[in-house]
Image 1: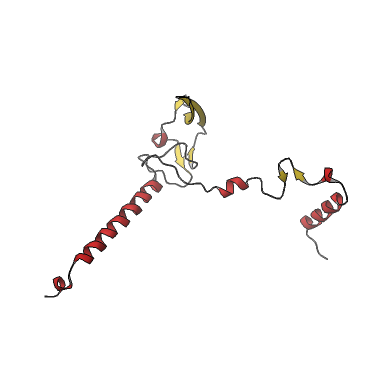
Image 2 (image 1 turned 180 degrees about the vertical axis):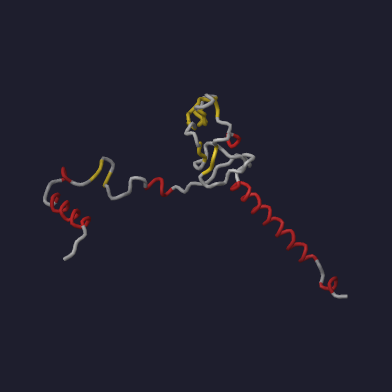
Length: 147
């Protein structure tokens, strides 16, 4: 019987906890260890969050090459709003216009726009244009093409 070290460890641990009361159950404070620590993050799929065409520093893919980006909460009209602050200038982040701004998806264009946002716009407009072209072809008569 050729057990790997992890299998042997599991078997030893199982034997150790076998026959003991509920006090020795292998569970965490909020449940068992069976679920992964970051399961809630795996279920939530991250997507770019641009504001219009412009890159947003609150986007999960926005990074600062100087590690100066700091997300804070600021009360505005009684509501707590997340705000991106820069430690270098001591004020609000200037988004994609900063020389140290970058994107993990490499979607940040030199003028501060998000390429993923532009892709979405192009897809929507191309679908609309294609539908208009299909309408135009349907409006033609076959007699127009025959001479």
